[in-house]
Amino acid sequence: MKKFLSMSLIVAMTVATLTGCGGGSTEEKGGADTLKIGSMGPITGGAAYYGTEVKQGAQIAIDEINEAGGINGIKVEFNFQDDEADAEKAVNAYNTLKDWGVQMIVGATTSDATISLAAETANDNVFQITPSGSSVDCVTNPNAFQVCFSDPNQGIASAQYIAENKLASKVAVIYDSSSSYSSGIYENFAKKAKAEGIDIVATGSFTADNNTDFSVQLQDAKNNGAELVFLPVYYQQACIILKQAADMQYAPTFFGCDGLDGILGVDGFDTALAEGVMLLTPFAADDMAQATQDFVAKYEEAYKATPSQFAADAYDAVYVVKAAAEKAGITADMSASDICDALVEQMKTIEVEGITSVEGVPMKWDENGMVDKAPKAVIITDGAYKAM
Image 1 (cartoon, helix red, strand yellow):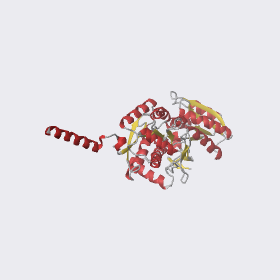
Image 2 (cartoon, helix red, strand yellow):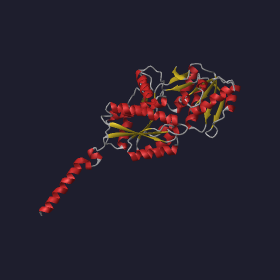
Image 3 (tube, one colour):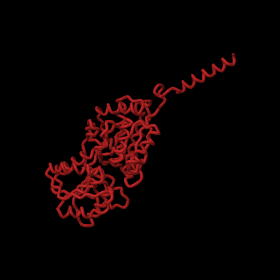
Image 4 (tube, helix red, strand yellow):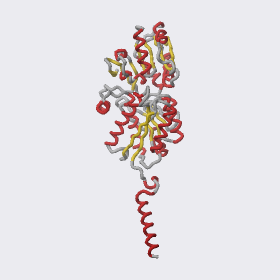
């Protein structure tokens, strides 16, 4: 009997010890001690510049937040996965992050990958905010938000800027009809250009399977007297277009959107060909606002390069998560679904002044998850982006 009682006492003490060490569920005891933010984008392949910028910009924000004590006093873990700008691989990256225990997503980086990801995060009710997925289809679900301008807004703002600054009366457009990013901007640019009295004298399209020779589109623009060529394309195609335009001695004004950001970093590209190119962007590295200069200094110290708007949008996206999370009072032991519900509710009301917003005019979000912030314009001068 004594042996039996002794064994019973040992078992009881063991159970009590296990329970005290967190043997209960995390819902009951709060065993988790960090918040997990996941992200994805291309860090290999043709679009690697974008994903690398997003990863590095977000990392600076994460480091700053942790150094300042975290979110609601909770440190943040960050996990970035390579999706090669591919829709299927973005889903694979998300599944890897789920296995890791992700609670919030800052991603994806490109539009098509973000659209594919959005279906998964909506099904799981996981909060998602994309730094740079600009298609309206990125935010069709209530759990999804954008920090970048949407494609319609980029097209509309570009037409307005060209008209208000009297940059040209005759305009040509070259766009990628196989890209939701490019075609979405073009369609809204064309509508707004007509309303603004801008004459689109030539429209040339291409696809992902035919994106190395733009001589026909450029010749059509030149023959029709286009003073400005609007390029809602990515910088890889823009490099070729600028080179081929120079070869045929055609020198209109070239005007693009955020996809052109990165053109100065292309290996082997003669940056003199980009002299005078203008683009709408939410970020200019030479902006003298203190927050911008602090970010640029940290980025250049860490990565030996000047950050682009993709890095800046990712930096802001992390701080948007922080603002919503702190207002919602989220804790590390909450499920990803509960965190999503709490963040979505706060996104309806928060205003965040970031480095991609105009100083004194904070960002806010509409009922569709699209950001409301003022655009900026930059011009490439002497191989650098200059605020206009």
